[in-house]
Image (cartoon, rainbow, N blue to C red; front, side, top):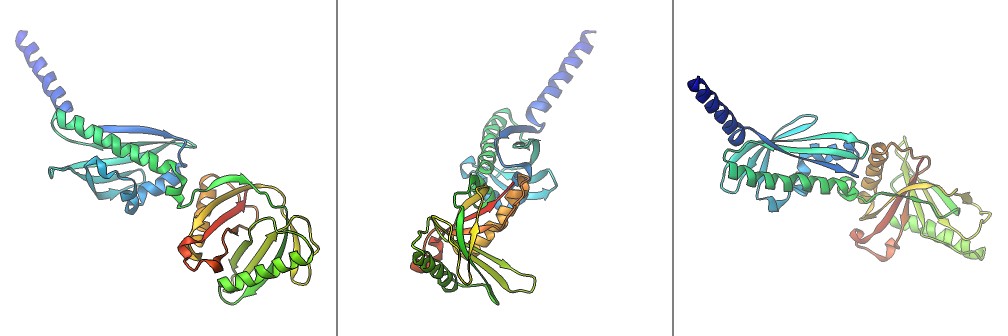
Length: 289
C-alpha cells in the first residue's frame, strides 16, 4: 500500500513538474475602448506592421512562421540566442473590446517567470497601439458636428486630375464673388475631386459664407444642414489625402456608419504658399448617419 502511495506521489510530482517546466504558458489581456475587432484584426494580420507595436524594450525578437484567421505562430528569439515556439491570438468580446493572448513554451521556472513579464509587455503594447485611431487608420478620425451652413460653389470637369493652380483659380473666383457681394468667407475652402467612370474628373470647390448669396454664372448657392461628421487632419500632399479618404471608408465600415453625402477636403493652408507638400494640412470630412 505504501509502495503504491509512493508511486502515486511520484507520478503527481512528475506531472506537476511537467506543467511547471515544460507546458506552454499564456499571457492574456482584455482591452476595452479599442478599435473594433475588424480594425484590430487588420493590425494583427498585417505582420509587416508588427514592428510598429512590438516593444524593442521587451528584449525579444520574433519571426513569423504561420498565419490563420485568429492566430499568428512565431519563433521567439531571446537575448541569449534561445529560440522558443510561440503563438499570438486575438478574439472579440463585444463591440469595442478584444482579448489578446500570447503563449510560448520555455523550460525552467525562473526563466518562465521572466518570460511571462516580457510577454506581458508585448501584449500590453499591442493593446496600446490599437487604442489609437491614428495607428489603425493613419489618421486620428473622430466624430463631430458640421459648422458651415451657407456656401457658394463651382463645379468643373477636367480630363486629368486638377493641379494646385487650377484649384486655387476657382477658389480665387469664389473669394472675388464674395467680396463683390460685400459678404465674408467664414472658413477654409472645401474641395472634392471625384474620378468618373470615363476617366475624367469632377471637381467641386466651395467657400462657406456669413450669409446666403444668390450665385452668379457658374457660381451656385448651396446649403449644408448641420449634421454629424467624421473628420481627421492629414499631413501631406494629394496622395496622403487620397489614402486618408480610403481609410475613412474602412473607419465607416468598422463602426457601421453610412456616409450620406459627398466627402470633402478642408484646405487649412494656402497650398500655393507652401511648396513642401509634407507641410500641407488638410481636414478630410464626411457627413454620416
